[in-house]
Image (cartoon, rainbow, N blue to C red; front, side, top):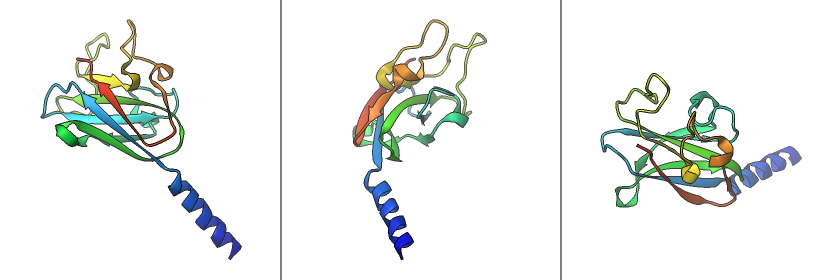
Length: 140
C-alpha cells in the first residue's frame, strides 16, 4: 500500500508541475508551407539535429491565424527552440552548397545567424519556470 501511495504522489507531483510552452511564429513566407518546431534542453545538436531534440511538433493555427507550436508537460529548466518553415515539404532544411539556409528559419530570442554558422544554444536559451508564450520571427 505504501508503494502505491508513493507512486500516486510522484505521478501527481509530476503532473502538477508540468509546464506548457506556446511558440508563436511570425513572418511566415507561405501559407502552404509546413512549420515545424524543435525544443532542445542542451547544446548538443542545436538547432537542426532532430535526433538530439527533446521534442518536435508541427505548428497549428492559433488566434488571429498566427501559427503556434505547442509543447506540453515540460519541466522547469532551460530550453532553446528552433523553427523551420519547410517550403517544399521535404522535411529538411534546404541549404546552398556552402551551407546557407534556403528556407526561412528562426530560434528563440530571435538570435541571428553568425557569419560562419547558426546561433548557439546559450544565445537562444531561456528559463521556463511557468507556462509561457514566446514569439519567433523567421529569417528569410
